[in-house]
Length: 278
Image (tube, rainbow, N blue to C red; front, side, top):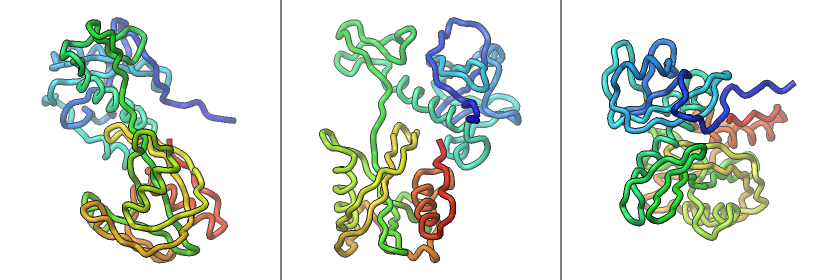
């Protein structure tokens, strides 16, 4: 029997009373010892510097709203925590909810004004869209498709590290899809650009929302087809083949990057395939 999802998205009327809310500011999300969800009525009594409010869905059946602040403020008994920390620990359903909230907050901040004429926009009731009446233009949340691929060669996997990674960590190759490009074309192009390697037998493995700030990661597995590794200057600090029994520090367990690696390890060992979070 399939368990019901704890978090589901929805466009809720902000004029409705009651419900729970999450609060997002420039320091992350507000939380206390009970977590990141607060009674909406309690938050309203705090006189927070709210820039906008959005009805975003249901968590365990309860309506959830998002308060986007102009800036983070101190709240007695509470602290601020970044989205990545929620991903690394705690309830994954909470991270899914906050990941969606973070993307809505980014969209709300970046589309307060029309990009064509500069006039103020308004939220459209019942739809996740901002509207410019002057240009008759609807502005929706941005989603940036990107690919991530694990390239393998028998008992070896090709992993690389970016200068932006935490010290010592290696991951699969990744990059954004260009306009007019298929996801498969993107995989071939990015692998060639980043490490000068040819690949074959591309296989789609799954996708994951990556709200940092608004990516949709499309995961692939590919087999090595030729070429010597030549790391891309300024993008790839190091890239090399690792034996599956001697791997470096890897990405977080809940990431699609880690899933691609674990899935291949399971395939080689005959172990059950892991489940892709989210």
